[in-house]
Image 1 (cartoon, rainbow over the protein chains, first blue to last red):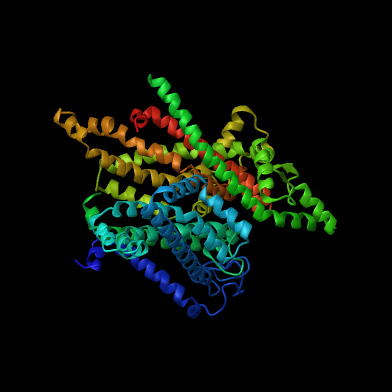
Image 2: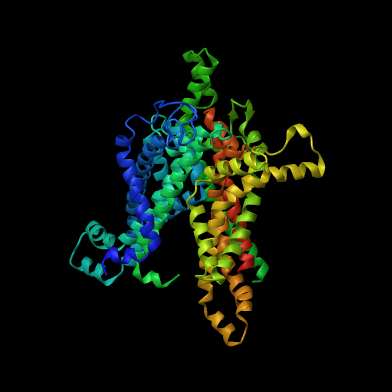
Length: 276
Length: 328
C-alpha cells in the first residue's frame, strides 16, 4: 500500500492534516488579507467581535485580533519548525555517535541527557531566553536546548539496535567508512521514528513558544499568539475575545500536529497498528 | 542479606547517584550566572546613578568577578553549600530567604495537583481500558487529546472568565482573602477555595498524560500470562481487572509521576502567574519583569534540586511497591 493509503486509514489524522493545511494557508496569505502590520492601530479599541469591521474584535490599543492570529501563525510555525529542526539535527548527531561508538562517548551523553531530564525544562527555557535577551534566535535556541536530549536518546537506541546487524557488518567488511555507514546505512533505517518524534516535537515547541511569549519573553517586534493572550489578560473582564481567539488558534494547531504525528506513526510503523 | 539491609543499600546507592547530577546542575547554574552577571553589575551601577569605573570595579570585586573562573566556581559552590544564593537587590532580601518564603504555596499547589491528576488519571484510564473502544473510551481519549494540546495559561484565563467573572464561584486570584483576617479553620477553608482553580488548571495537562498512560498500561498488562492463568482458574473478569491487572498497571504511572515533576514546576510558573498564586512560579515571573537574574537562578536551582529529591523519593517508594527492582 502506498504511504498515503496507509495514512488515510486514520480518519483523525486526515482531519488533523486538513486543519494544519488551513493554518499554513492562513500564515501564507496573512500579508494579502491583512495588508497592515498586525501592530498597527486598525480602529476603535476593545471592539467586540463582528463590530467596527473586526471579525474577531480588537484589543486595548485597537489592534485587529484576527490579523494578529494570522500573522502569529507565521511566528509559531517558524519558531517551532526551526527549533525542532535544530533539536533533531543536534540530537541525531550526538545520539548517533553515542549509539554507534558506545563506550565513553555514550557514557558522557547519557549523563548529560539524565541531567537535562532532571532540570525543569520550561524554567530552563525561561532562564535561557532571559539571559540571552528575548528575540527569535534566543527563543529558538532555548527550545532546541531543552528538546534535543529526547531525540538523542531515541536515535541512540535505534543505532544500538542496528549497529550489529548483518548488513552493517557487511558494510564493515567491504571497508566502508564509519561516517558513511552511519549516514547512508543506519540513519535511513531509523528515519521513521525520528520523523514521528520530530512532528510531535513541533507541537510541544509551539506550546513552549506561546508560554514564553505569554510571560513577556517573546520577540518584542513580532506578533505571536502567546503575546496576544498575555496582552489581553488585563482586560479579561471587559474584552474576553482578546485572550480567547488566539488560544483557540494554539489549541487547534497543536491538536492538528499531534493528530498528524499519530497518523505518521501509524503509517510509518504498520506493525504497530494492530496494537491499541 | 536480609530484605532490610538490601533496601538500605539501595537507598544509599540512589543517594550517591544523585550527587553527580546535583553537581552538574550547580555547574550549569554557575555558568549561566556568569553569562548574566556582567549585566547585573551594569544594571546595579546604572541604578545607583553614579557609575564611576572605580565603583564598577568595586562591585566586581564584591561579587568576586575579578578572579579567574575556576576560583569563582569554587567560591560559588562554597556559597551554595552554605545555603547562600546571593542577594536580590530588587527585593532587598537574600535569595535563599525569598525562595524559602515562597516555597510553601508552591508545594501546596503541586501536592494537590499531583493528587488530583494521578487520582483522576488512574480512574479515567481504568474506565477507558475497561470499556475499550466503547463511547466511554472514545470520549476519554478525545478529552485527553484536547487537554494535551491546550496551553495551560489559556485554560486558566478561560476558567477565570467562566467560573470567577461570570459565575462568581471562585476568586480570580491570590491565595487568601487578606482583608477578612480569617483564622483557624476559616482560613484553611479560604485558602482551599482559592486553591481550586489553580489546581484544576495545572492538573488538566497531567491528567491527560496519566489517563493515556494508565490506559496503555492496563491494556499491556491485560495481555500477560498471569491474566490467562487467572482466567483459567475461573476468576471473574471483574476481579482480574480490578485486583490483578490494576495493581501491576499502577507501577509505570508511579514512575511517571516522578519524572513529570520537572514539567510540573514549569507549569506552575505559568499557572501561578495567571492566578497570582504567591509561590515560586509567581516569584520567577516577578523576577523576569524586574530582570532580577540572580533570583531567577536561585529559583531554577531550587526547582532542579526539588526534582532530584522527588525522583529519589519516588524511587524509594517504588522499591517498596515492586520488590523486583532490587534484583536488577
